[in-house]
Length: 468
Image 1 (tube, rainbow, N blue to C red):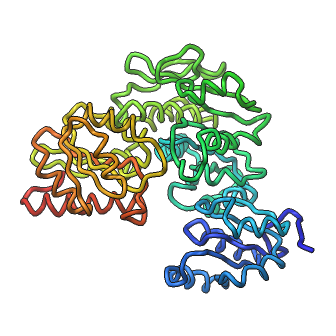
Image 2: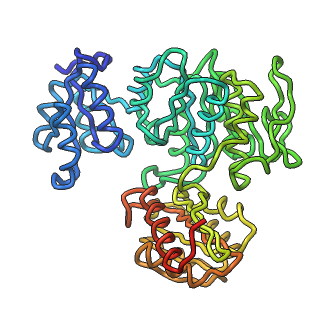
Image 3: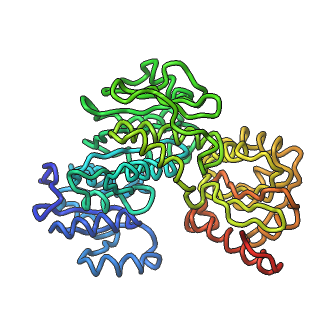
């Protein structure tokens, strides 16, 4: 009979790692270092797994063929699920039916962590907010480990964290689906808008996955939420019990917010020990757009809840720089600004990006759709964009919905940049903000942004102008 005890992820365990992407490889490495017996499984074609097989072989981890999985299940004490693998995957169902506990990578990371965790989720803004919280805590003199969907997998960060350190984690709905005990000291839910509806049958199920971020919290923990977001309003109305202290931020300056924006300035309400007052003016931030003011409010609340000084938060807000692929300036040539927002992978993120600029915009958009509606995005593009260059599987679908902008189509990023050069003039912004996943044309959103930057650089330098 299968052993169903709770895994310690050490030499007493035999673990199956399901999925050998970044998280899966990191999990295999950490568990092998702890003495666990580990095997790995991935249903990609064998010829596409040569690099991963070599990495696993050096760790002493066999990569199983499909026919070998059943035998491994019989010996397993636990399985660790990579974020991209759904709970209804046949391998996961077979493991669960055998009574073998299935854990998410962040669940294992949590159980191996000595440090308190700040976990950040939401449909957009996760990476910027996560990195900004880490930056604010470092400004306060803390030793901080930032990971999850940003940077290294979370498990690599938690095993390196000491008792007095802090871990700041970007966590996705995929990662939250299969948590059991995962309990962050501070949880942050930024917003909820249509995304990943190719994985979730409805927004309700997508929301339920996000709500798991605070499900195990209790006394001594803190939840940070968005008063302006419809999800925040529903949570405040009691759609889900939040079993810990609640702090709220508001871009619209709603009454009762613990951090809010008013008259161009970010404020906080104080906590009885540290007095209320101004944090920074919005124009002191290096981040563009109202959505990034929201991210700054959320990050400030999380850092203050972790005990950071108001001075450290102010200093950190003023010194933080944009992350790659998130409204990142790439070049300014002949008066045209080139902006990489490749991490805008859902339609609402494109709307927020367009709102960040007052200049005329030439937009590069499109990619692999995630079963989301493009109506609101296309309406915003139609009102705000002078020309759109469309790429990927969704190009024709988006193009048919646009009214007003000039529309061009491109089969590659090089073609898209070339088309944008022909459409833009001095004073314009060329904005890569796809509103879709990247996997139809690229390995990742990061690679898509890198290809964009390389094409811009080649074209600018080809014209004898330096990228600024």
